[in-house]
Image 1 (cartoon, chains in turn orange, cyan):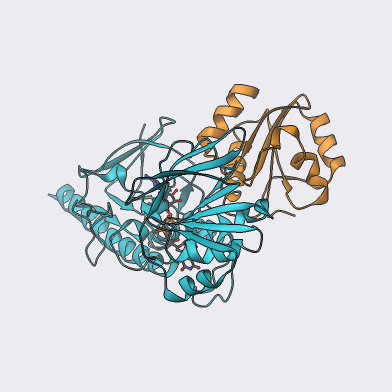
Image 2 (cartoon, helix red, strand yellow):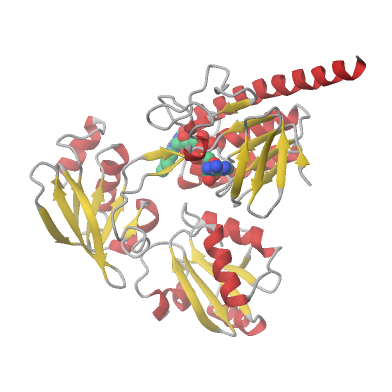
Amino acid sequence: MLQTNLTHVLSEKDHAALLKANENVMICCGRMGPMCIPVYEAMEELEGEYKHVKFADMEFDSPDARIIRNLPECRSFQGLPFVVYYKGGKVVKATTSIQQPKQITTILDEHFGKK
Amino acid sequence: MDTQYDVIVLGGGAAGLTAGIYLSRARLRTLILNEGATGGQMTLTHEIANYPGVENISGYELARRMRSQAQKFGCTVKSNLTIAAMDLTGEIKRVLLDTGDAFTAPAVILATGGKSREIGAPGETEFKGKGISYCATCDGDFFTDKEIIVVGGGNSALEEAVSLTKYASKVTVVHQFDHFQAFEHYVVEAQKNPKIRFIMESKIEAFEGDEALRSVKIRHQQTGAITTMAVDGVFILIGYVPNTKRFEGIVTLNGAGEIVADAGMATSLPGVFAAGDSIAKRYRQVTTAVADGTIAALNAAEYVNAKKKEVKAEEVL
Ligand SMILES: Cc1cc2nc3c(=O)[nH]c(=O)nc-3n(C[C@H](O)[C@H](O)[C@H](O)COP(=O)(O)OP(=O)(O)OC[C@H]3O[C@@H](n4cnc5c(N)ncnc54)[C@H](O)[C@@H]3O)c2cc1C
């Protein structure tokens, strides 16, 4: 399990339940590595501000993370973490490698509305 | 309205967090404003094995512990923010965030560290994470049985070139000079490795591809000849640059853009101190950043306390 304060998605079942229960979801699929940690930290800080978005993480190496690894939107990705934004259960945006907080909030604002 | 502090620390890496620990323990109202993730470059390090008293610790864990230690003493740590403007020249320094929040203090410590150097060639931003990486330990396994380039000729480039041969079928080291800057043992190990070949005196001119990186254009420095090389991935390991652009024309920087600080970590501007990788010095380690942060904090504390005494004396008069 990733050492973050985010909601952890541990299985495909968790993933499905999370998307069903929440309209706006951001999942960061990574490891405890240098490119991923800044994204988790940004998400932890944004959690309090974007109450209408559910922030979660998923361990990249868990077999069930294929639900993210194999998404067509992530086909060309070769840098951790893979971050996927879902609206109403559908992927609206996916990013690869480290993202600055400003890049994340731009996506959140565009797809889920401002805080 | 501006929120007042005794000391504002810009940067929340090893140097800034250490300064935060010392300052808040000295009962000074201390604010750390950090543009990146807490811990700075420490979070780039999977394992730190040379921090005295701690045999093995991940950089992430060491950073978390430093932050929590600073917070326990009362330090406020704000990370992942954007500084919109700052005025460090007056008696009272002011820092404004892009959110509109503003903070003032009589003293500031610049502990903004450094970041990976980028090549600056066309396509570099576009293919980041889609073939271009700055972290071999993070992304190496995406290139299993693939052909990759490592750019650089220093210790990390050659060390990582060797470690990437665990995954890649072929590693080409592209280096701008005709000799390496790395320690001899790294050079020998890379040269001995049958999967590694070298293109010397050459620079990458452009990154090309479609949805992912497919090839690079390489220019030979002497002849000017440009060749196109098909490649699956490029790891850029060409060192670090200090995060000091914002301080140009405010405090004295040397030719490499590093902040010039004296033995007490004072900069050219009264009330402005500096610490860690952003200052001009030879060795850049967690231990040296921590030491700089300590010295900067103790001198900033002395400076602030002296200012407070001046104000009290004026009030008595
Ligand atoms: C891959 C790697 C491995 C390493 N391994 C080791 C090791 O094993 N042992 C060891 O001792 N050292 C190691 N080092 C070196 C060590 O990590 C650094 O020397 C040390 O962490 C520097 O700390 P710092 O606080 O000076 O700067 P940084 O860690 O760079 O922190 C500076 C912080 O300031 C922020 N910032 C930048 N600009 C601004 C601004 N204008 N305003 C506010 N904040 C700003 C940055 O986002 C960052 O969070 C390694 C470095 C790297 C890159």
